[in-house]
Length: 160
Image (cartoon, rainbow, N blue to C red):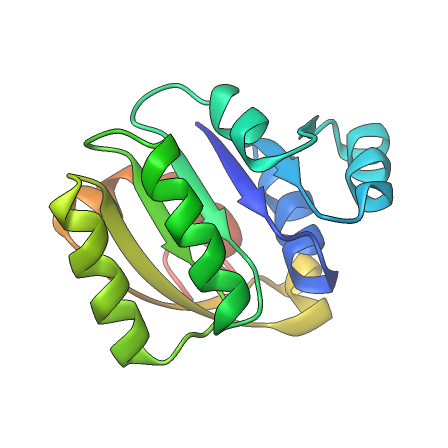
């Protein structure tokens, strides 16, 4: 599996590390490129200079996982992704957005045929070693597309 993680702050970067260490290919983009370069050297992520380049490095059905602050940052990236993705692709919001925002974003993306999953993520900086607790919602198709990543991020394939 290959997916993109957009937002490589402390939690997003450690999630990218954990995914790479569990056999998931990660395309990484962050507005500050230093962490992208560091993760490319240390973990072998595939660097992207912008969101469009990240999407171009994925194969359908493409999965783009946002690890951004809830609110305006997430909103702006979801809007941009609507124009970059195709029917059947998946957007995952891992930034603990308000469920009302998630429902609205899911409905908006569905009109374009794009799947949406909200994935409330807990684990902080300890998630790299201990795994993450993921509170995931979405269609069966969206969940099936991201299941390998969910299992890699969880404390074990059957927990978290």
